[in-house]
Amino acid sequence: MSYPQDYFSAPIDINLILSGSFAELRTNHFHSGLDIKTQGKEGFKTYASAAGYVSRIKISRYGYGKALYIKHPNGYTTVYAHLKKFSAAIEAYVKKRQYQKETFEIELFPKAGTLKVLDKQLIAYTGNTGGSGGPHLHFEIRDPQERPINPLMFGFDVKDTTPPVIYGLFGYPISENSHVGGDTKRVEIRIIKQKDGTYKSEPIIAYGEIGFGIISMDRQDLASNKNGVNNIQTSFNGQKSLEVNLNRFSFDETKHLNRYIDYEFLYNNKKRIQKLFIEKNNPLSVMNAFTNGGALKIENNTYSIYKIFVSDFKGNQSELNIPIRGVYQKLSDPINRNAKLQHVSATKETVLQKDNVSIQILKNTFYEDVDLLFEVSNDTLKLHTALIPLQKSITINFDISKYKKEDKTRLFIGSVSRYGNKLYYSPTKKRGNTLSTRTKYLGSYSLGIDSENPEIKAINFKNKSWISNHKYLKVKINDKVSGIKNYRATLNERWILMEYDTKTQLLTHDFEDQTITETENNFKIIVTDNVGNSSTFESIFYRK
Image 1 (cartoon, helix red, strand yellow):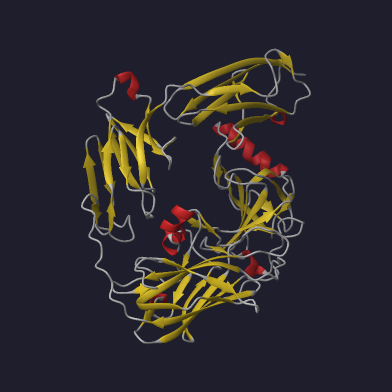
Image 2 (image 1 turned 60 degrees about the vertical axis):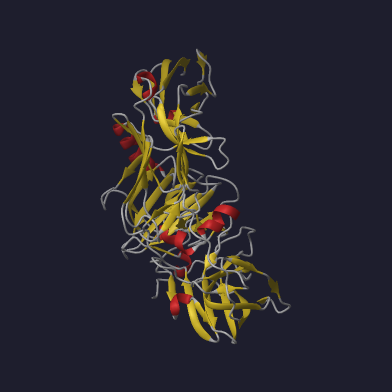
């Protein structure tokens, strides 16, 4: 499919250097755009990539932070995220509705004629809001069906003459009687970079149905960031085997990244192996197998060559050659299933229950049948470890009828950190004597109790002080146990907008909102945590 090459222009007027590429492998999803570096700073002017109208505005503490969506006459939508602030007209439109609804977090869908923009019109300034790990501009192009497409397909140019790097190769025995190097489970295979730039593995012996996986990254010329690759192709004895084309996907399928990578290896090693064979219940459209789902069938007394070609968008390519000798081996009997584990069928709904804990698992939550460790002790649930990906959320219920009435209101369900030294609040609902949470992660969960009120601290003012020269009013808020749920700030008993930066825990009010009409001002803020504990801070300041 062809895409318009001269329609969209760059959203910022500095060199396009990427800290993140399209379809890069991220936690539970493919990256849906380009992360454009902004020299470690905020505040670069951001322009409409083409004429159109603002179709959506979303402000969130997390995720994209401050984000703009522009619909264009050709049906495409461009997205600009992690913004510091919007241009004057858009900012005024948003703030008016924030004050009307008395909320910082907001999502708006302006009508087509409300906020029209011209090509290269100033629409915002780059920032570091939401879940951003540093200042940059996240930029997307979506088709009329809201599917993200690699912006580089539209003619944007990023300097890249460097081929991808292949860091690791792994073999996977797939069928019951198969092996790779005599192993019946995943095995790492040593690879060596040749003088001509290609890679070659040590010769391996194998038998039966097997597959391979790689760890690979790409680098552009002007940045040291390890970015995702664009295309992977494999061949077996000269015949096409599999292609992974990472130029377009849909948001409906992005979670299935967890079926593409080796999820267990990621949990244990914090590295992502891309499996170059299509396993059962993997619906990813980015993967196209030509034979046998990309897996190989190795017969006894055979010699074969398997090749992997890894490319970036500019066509720079790395090649890995794997010589395979087919050798049948009698394998040891498989280890019997642990009787302590609970067998869960992927195609059936399952309820696990013990003591005061029950778990509801909907059908098709797992990609395949699994055996789970399920233990309950002293209000702590151990539900296996987070080695297995989930397609759907499971529901965990705790019966709290044994607790005192005054304690029940302060209880919550938390996920236990990997090493058991911290409890993280999991969104908890209470119905009668039952606490419930929904999660997409296996692991340990426990009841926690939060009897501490949130902390509130003035940052740039003191009680009864003059702050006429201040542009902002800043307050820091924190809750050490269950976390902040909401807050409400007023000046002279009128609600004011305070923007929340969760990374710094700062609330900031901009005096340009012109909410002040008096010299003496009564500031009040109420902060509530996730179990309902609240704190109130009040102060007087003077301003002319």
